Amino acid sequence: MTENVQQVNEGEEEPGWAPDPDDEWGLAVLETAGRQIKKWRELRKMRAVQFGRLVNYSEDMIYKIERGERIPARLDFYDRADEALDAGGMIAELKENVQKVRYPKKVRDLGKMEGAAVEIGVYENNIVPGLLQTPVHAEALLRAFKPTYSEKDVERLLAARMARKSVFERKPAPSMHFVVEEAPLRRRVGGTMAWKRQLEHLLEVACLDFVTLQVMPTNSDPHPGLDGRMELLKFTDGAVAARADGLFYGRPTKEAKQLRIIELQYGTIRALALSPRESLAFIEQLLGET
Image (cartoon, rainbow, N blue to C red):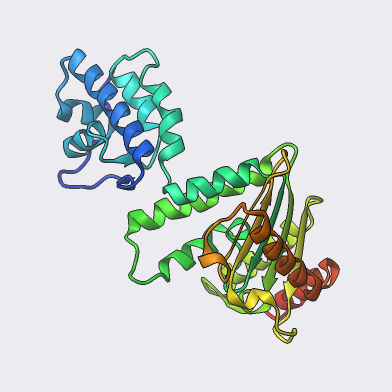
């Protein structure tokens, strides 16, 4: 082992996140991982400050990780820790479980459901759907939130949102359908170049054979989506889960009667929106206005 690494400046706070206090499983995973790291460090008779120098973390950060109070932003920390403590892969293998809890529980739950769904339907009336956002567009939206997120929160939430996009890489891919209002497509989030790249990304995604994208023009007749966002997820066993901002207190539901209402409203929205071909032409027209 070598200590030929960049030493952390005294008082510098390394990138990392505090776990959600109400995420019991996540807290348990982090506490278990932390205990393992501490056990190996003490077995090697290595002080926290010395270990920190080897992995480029401060002494304070090492103690926080060992107590399960901090999630390293870069999970290669566990590989470096394994090497520094000569743990033979025992610490490196902790990375898999920490990877599962590094994002907020609400986002993890959504990503897990999207990852299992065979059909995904989304309607958005205020923003571009998260699954369709570019990193720059998503970051600009997060930075617009009030009260302002900390830099670490922006980094964590952005990483979580981008991680959900792995659904596009599934084999076989789920059938995905999006309806987006015209207004958020015209809002130049992040500036003209970022907005242009976001529109280009929408055109790229819409060309995938498992994706359908429709635009709801502002001059359309009133429709059920005016109350807010909707999402429907269908699974291989025939189960369905859905949520709508304006129905059933905005809570996710699997009850048949409530699902029928949401599916009816979503179907109405799709019928009133521009066709997929008209929608692509509309987005291309917006691009031409830059």
